[in-house]
Image 1 (cartoon, rainbow, N blue to C red):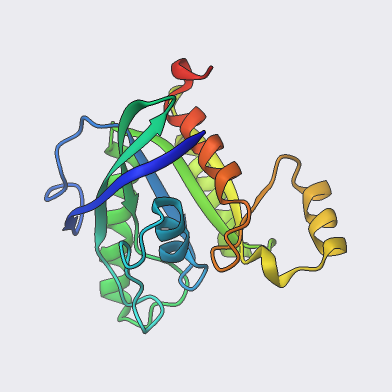
Image 2: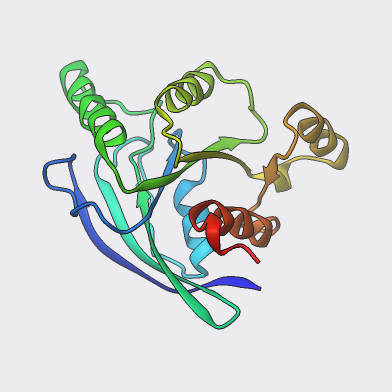
Length: 201
């Protein structure tokens, strides 16, 4: 069984220049504001309040770093979760938004430690243009040693027929609900195998 046994907030950064040094394998979480990003990170770590969401969607504009310790077969594996600002809802000036987006694209394109991109999508709205654009963008910059995983959040809001239809359309889709704690273990297994592909049993 794979689980996260330790999770700690390390620091926040505005962009590449004030980020932690490259080195530890990183998992980057991307998603629209209000997609449930903080809730999923907290559910993965089984630690309430680890990642904090803003009361105002889109207000958080910092890159947040968390040290994570996985345990598999009594062996520890260290990595880092990187929580990026949510996109799509920010009510900020155009100048600030452009600067913010530049910081994020610079980070994503120049960061060597990123092993996995986790794109979170609201399972009730899987075809939003902004999500498809982000997916295309990440696919365009993926390096051979990087992987993109799509996780559909708020699966508890779907009935069984809707879940089946989503899985047919997105083969291999991971459906999770942070409130019901469903799909979390499957998502963690997929995440672990993607971060540490050489250590799969």
